[in-house]
Length: 122
Image (spheres, helix red, strand yellow):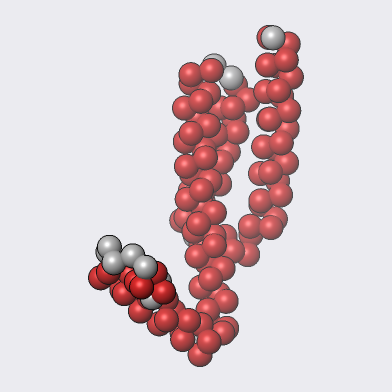
């Protein structure tokens, strides 16, 4: 961030603010490694939850346009998984490996179903 100030003077205040936040976060992580591990994992779960929600919503809208029942199931599953992760991030951090593999398995099966239905229609 600071290095880009030498080449591009636009948004100087925002770049300095982000650099200070990054330095502060680095010091916190180095001074409290155990807490930072827990919160980094919780942040990862929140990131996965928001991604699952957006993926579920886009898949549900695709289902309504294409009239695919497999996409509808996949979208609802992704949306429910994302909402559960966002509702309980610390519990989700523990359960992601266990629940995630089941969701991915069902997601793969739904994708295979949609692929075979699309192949028959073509």
